[in-house]
Image 1: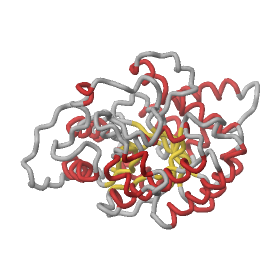
Image 2 (image 1 turned 135 degrees about the vertical axis):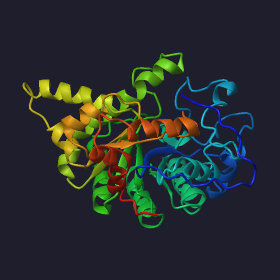
Image 3 (image 1 turned 120 degrees about the vertical axis):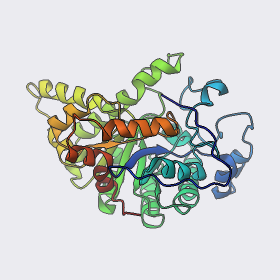
Image 4 (image 1 turned 90 degrees about the vertical axis):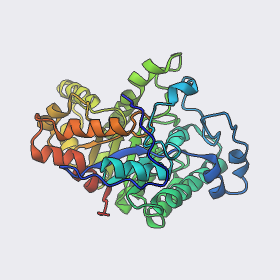
Length: 369
């Protein structure tokens, strides 16, 4: 899936690419780097960044996603190389990536901070979320408004989460916050988190459930990353969606918009099929209507086989294209997956337009840049 890129001559600016369709990436990733992240941290926690192990891929600022994400460095080398001029996932690398692929905007999510739900100590959790949001705002969004970071909030402490959500939306112009799909001690539909959902609805911002940590999903005894990856993202998203839907969050907050990212689109087919059967015996929420409403966004890649079927089943408002760069594909793979959607003759013009740009633009309320 990944392709090594040839290095571009140093100092030469990439020419922007024109595509047949506008493309907005609903799920890219920034890479937390201790050398730049640390200066945004409160002095009381800055030492965590400053003692970063120079040989490690991580920063030590956030917990490990699980026990199987440690791979030999040679397995990382081909991944997400962009054009080879800058550190992978850095602001400069993303600017190059946008130019050489023709992507109009990207919505950026965390990498290591996907495990933020595992944190338990209140003072540290609150301060590290604030530092992350300041860092993402200054290092990415302020550098180039085509990069739209989504923030993180201390979900473990709803009062503090509401404060940070308001700050990052009103002061940092972020489109919303990421909710960890696993790691929290309560399922996402639990009433403990409802003050956060009310605040998001009042702010008219998004909340996006993003797969990340594997903990507590039944894979804790897996010893290989491959089977864990195969299952943990879609299973985590299904669990979150069903929890939110059946515990009444969508009904209680009719203006709330929720995204479900990095698990493909096939999980939606599965739960729609199960809901149809279950509702014959135990009536529940109309999941199909939720998907049709435009309040739910599902990230999908060009290779998702279920996309045309889902378009026929739930309409064209729920799906949006994602690159997942730089976690998996390099620049050529990103372009390849874009064109899998652009050139897919199973989709009509309106459906391609919706997936490639308009759904993400509407859902995240992105202004043209």
